[in-house]
Amino acid sequence: DVKVTQSSRYLVKRTGEKVFLECVQDMDHENMFWYRQDPGLGLRLIYFSYDVKMKEKGDIPEGYSVSREKKERFSLILESASTNQTSMYLCASRQGTTEAFFGQGTRLTVV
Amino acid sequence: QKEVEQNSGPLSVPEGAIASLNCTYSDRGSQSFFWYRQYSGKSPELIMFIYSNGDKEDGRFTAQLNKASQYVSLLIRDSQPSDSATYLCAVKAGTALIFGKGTTLSVSS
Image (cartoon, rainbow over all chains, first blue to last red):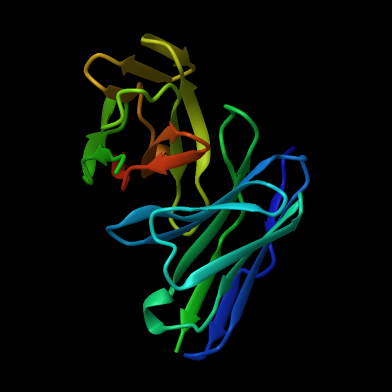
């Protein structure tokens, strides 16, 4: 089974903190994605990566950055957390035209 | 901007009925389409994918694609209370998948 693992299930951070969300996949997928999911807004793409050290902005990249130093790991960074970044964050990976496999999600609360 | 539209619902059907979920997309060049199911508090999980015009059946689920109309649907036959969830339509746009906001389905016993 494909496994996508996110480092934390729940996180509480303070406004202004730098926050790292980690995601690891074990299927050698080229493509990895970070989405956030909010009630009424659905899944929105923040950033994605199609290869090591390669990244592309999604629909809502402002306030975020990403890092992909190894193929299996894709990190989402909140440079200075704000309350409007309180959300459910979902990491996904896929290969070619196949479906995306999702991690279990990280519920981030910024206070 | 490429868009995927779904009715938010809720769509309510009685147990044993057919539930019909619909999705439209804006990018005429899209080639791959996916339906995900998401239970409350859980991650999305794939139900079906479809690439070609027409119908694709898998058990109680049938996906229908009409590229000319830019329309994809999911039919759930013999709906069960366990089918109560949010259903997400996703369209491949380049490397990424673009998701609709989802339709909430409620199946009453």
